[in-house]
Length: 240
Image (cartoon, rainbow, N blue to C red; front, side, top):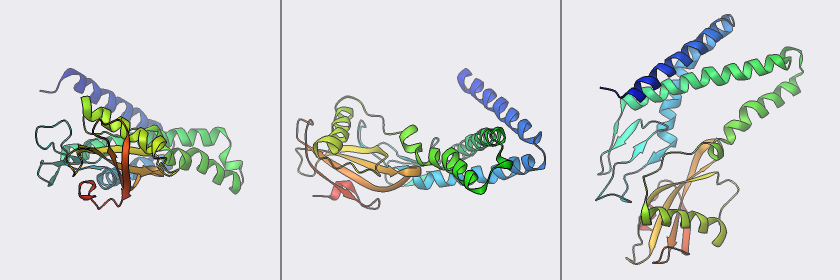
């Protein structure tokens, strides 16, 4: 049986969604079009999240292997701890539902702001600037504003991850302007069996993943001894 917080959360979601739908329907035919169009778009975004946001099976903080996941904010695919993933319909639908409500609410905010600024009376150049500033720019900055779920780290592994991220920026001075967010994939022993290695998945503007970063720490786990950038398809754990 679902817990009380879950039930209250679902009821709150239904209320907010209903209010957003009513607002759009009162806006006329274009509002109805957006209410209908947002549904398939939300499912498309849920599927897209399973491509963009991936955490493979990991060992940090686990007795053996912990299952990874694809998708965000809810996992649309779940790992099995042995390298395979399986479709998670509950997470997929939950993602689509959340994206649907988000599209309705944010869309309503943009439309209302545009009307208050007399969109219909503005020139094309002003409209382009409005879209760039109000829609495109916030989407580009999403990695800097919204964190992603990462493996649950604690103790030494968490300290290694924090030190590695700090070293990438300050000690190694390797952070690039396009690096908008680094999420931990795993923390393991270096192949030499002495040092520590932390693997990150790197996201750029619009939350697009574009490479991985591995950082090697001294045995004490304080300072970096090296690191590198590799493609998303490569493994951090086979690098020398």
